[in-house]
Amino acid sequence: MRSGALDMEAGTRQRLAGMRLLLVEDNFLNQQIACELLQAEGAVVTVANDGAEGLACVAQSSPGGFNAILMDMQMPVMDGYEATRRLRAQGYSSLPILALTAHVLETERSECRAAGIDDFIAKPIDFDELIVTVARYCHRA
Image 1 (cartoon, rainbow, N blue to C red):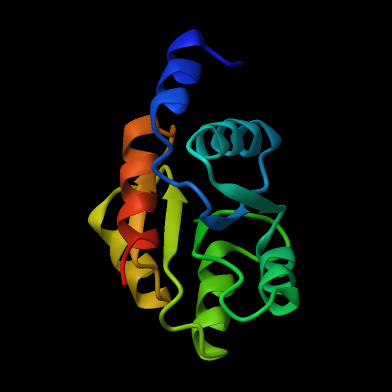
Image 2 (cartoon, one colour):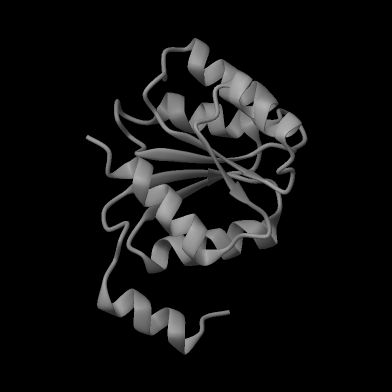
């Protein structure tokens, strides 16, 4: 799935170098695509298959273990809304959580914000939108 253009861009600069990201996504193909794009930009990516696994990954990591979480909102076991609410309730108020969602209507955005989501990345994933949005949150002081 690698393209020469992607390899060339990754070779010139890595906008996410050293960033530790948690990708919470139940779809294997979406996991592969997001991981490849993020890793090409220098990120270290941990994958969780649902919200419950995502919570476990955060709990098992050291303090500050992740720079940001990319959260699918529609998943089995525990969806992204519930996982985000639980993370916020556990005190992870400053950890950026970015929704990966095909639902971009204002009602869905409002529901995401109410759960504690910081920003949105539309599916299907656009390379530039993904990297720019993640970089914006990871590089905040």
